Structures are given as C-alpha cells and as structure tokens.
Image (tube, rainbow, N blue to C red; front, side, top):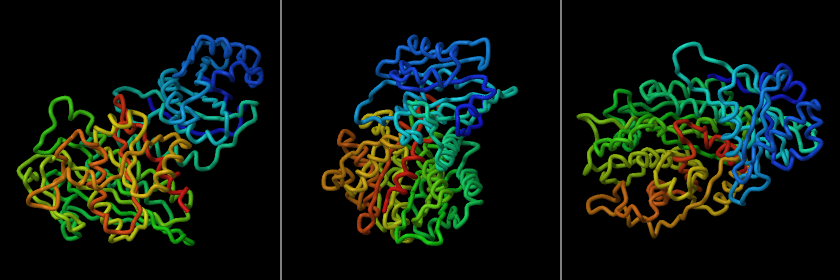
Length: 487
C-alpha cells in the first residue's frame, strides 16, 4: 500500500468523505462529553464504547468497528493518561504502533484526529502518525492507495492549526525512511548520491559538490575511500551547504554515516547478522532530511551537510585487518575489525567539517553500534557530546519532538585506551567490548576532531532508526529541531 499524507485545518474538512476515521486521544478524553460533541451523537457514542473495549493501560490500546454509514469504519486509539519523564508527553511510540495496527493497511481516505493535551505536542504526534504509513513498497499487482489527512484539536474541541514545519518534517521523515527501506542494489552509493542531489536541487541558497572514488585520497579522505574501494559503486562524500542571505555567525555541520550495505568486510558478518544491513545508511538519511527541512524553512544559521557514502563490500581490493590508514585528521588507524567501518567514514567526515568547512558545531548521526540498543533501548537513541549545554538541548528537543535520546558518558580518559595500537595512533575497534562500547565508538569519531574548537554531538540511532523490518525516519525531527534551537 502507498499513502499520501497531508494536514487539515478543521475537523469538518478533514472528515468529509473519509472512509476511515481514527481518533487518537488520552483515555481520560473519552470520558469528556466535549469529545463526543465533535461528532454526531451516534459516532460519539460509538467512540465511548470503543474506548472501553480498547483497554488502554500503560501502553495504550485500540478498537474499531464498522458503522454502516459514513465513515464506514471508526477507530478509537486510547493513549495512556500519563507517561514517565523519559518519554515524550505526546506518546509518539504508542501512536505509531496503534495507528499502524488499526489503519496501516486501510485504503481510500483515512482521517486521523489527534486530541492533544498541548498544541506543542502536534509535531511529535503528527510525525508518529506519518511513521504508521511508510512509503516504500514493492509488491506485485496493483497497489492499494490511502490518502491520509491529519487534523488536531485541543481537549475542549478547539482546532489546532498545523504549523508550516509539520509538513516539512513529516515529509522529510517519510522520505528518509523510504531511502533506508530501499534495497541496497538499488540504493548503492552512486544512486544514493543522485537521490540526495535531486532532493536538494530545488532548494534556494544551497550549493552541492561531490568527491568520488580516487578523488577522496586527494582530499585526504582515506577512511571513506578504504571502506568502499572494492565495491562496484565508488565511495564518495557529498557536501551541501546552505547559506541564508542574512546568516547568523553560526556554522553547523551535519555528518551522516551512509554505508549503503554492510557485509562486515573481510570480518564477514555471520548468518542472521547481515540481513537488514541496508539500514546502515540511516544516519545519512536522517541528516539529509534534517538539512532539507532547515533549508526549506529558512534556518538562520549556515548549515553544511556531509554524506559519507560507501558499500562495505568484499573482494580482492578489500581492506584487511592489519592495514593502517592515515585519516583526514592525520592520525593513523590500524584495522583490527573491518566490521567497525562506520567510524572510519565518520572520522573523516567530522574532521572535514571542522577543519575544511570550519563548522563551529558538528552533529554526526549513525547506525553505529548494536550496543546502542543494549545501552539505551529500542526507543531512545544514544547521544554523546563534548558540551554539556548541547547535550541538554538535544535531550529537551528529543522529548519535545518525539525522537527520544538519552546521554551516554563522554570520558576520553577512560575510552581511548581501548583503541591502543603498538604500530599506529589507534586501532578501529575496542579491546574490551564490555566497556561502554557505544561511548567508545563515539570517542573514536571525536578523536579525529578533538584538537579543533568545535562543539560536537554524536547520535547513535541504530535501534530506533530501523525496527521490525521497517525504517522510521528517526533523527530528522530531532536534528532539524535541535539546530533551530541553537542560538
């Protein structure tokens, strides 16, 4: 099924001609007489009864029924009345899961009515609904189509107007998820670069350049080159810069890991661990989407995008354990694990951002470690930062926009020793995998820009970016909102 996605300003417009209406509200709202008055007496009564059957509880619930009228199908999604302080108050995880389970395969016009405690919850809730209707599908036969319209009202029934950024963020998030869901033989580095340039081509005040294949070595980008040098599609760095006409004095860089497929290299992934590795460019998809939102919405800062693209393939030209690489930073890396390849791309990317582009703040996003899921779980990405204020900003932004994050330690004095080499400045993989592995991986990346004055925030989104066989577009809202929050 494919779906279009749009916003309506009022309930009447949104529900007109709808085949399916899904009402999303906290449990307490269904006992409020005002909710029933938003609809006809019959539909209002059905909603109350459906909410009783849904049995929401701590993780929410849903129930649906045929109406034998218009709309043909009515559904009630019951959200928990309260969540923990580590969750987003808009309950986005519940919304995605429940709306997807009850309406994700619907055809025709689907209206989702969000009953919000606070107008500030609209972005997180809308993005959660968007995730319930992913774009990519490649099944045979005629594809069913859904036209999804979202409308929001306050608990008293007052319409909540959609802010302009809602469309930009949800569209970019769905596009990012589509990129991650695309098979790797279709989205190899060259194809990914072309898609990125298409997405950015119509944006004002944006310039784009591409460094490909052997040119990477000329620019000192041996980390990116080494990982992708034996793949059919050449490795590359795509650099885009948005310069508004009246830019602030800030220059922010967004660096993304774009490994379009990760076999593990000569340290080949074992059976069961290689499937789904098309998702290893989820960080690049996230920063691409965020950059697009920022340029479309007129961010006041200069923003650069660096997409570090490679396929970690195997073949006669593949890099080997025991090889030594001189990175863009000038530091040397002894390879002891070809499956720790993403950090080589990011190390070059952040160094280029800080040294060549002279960004004062560098974000990097990556599906970097499986250990992230162990450290912070399926719903929270991990953040590591050299700046406490920047870390706090991203935590607050994550709770607000629904892309949840949780901090991991930034402690170079504890983690550098894990990369000790007898012949180079460092190795690329840790000695002790039980010693804060995700923080260590982040430390490796930062090591290649630590002698610059740039602030840095690393986002390991391995688990939230891709779960249960589908990409989420995680990180687009987080990074776009985070950059906008910087002063």
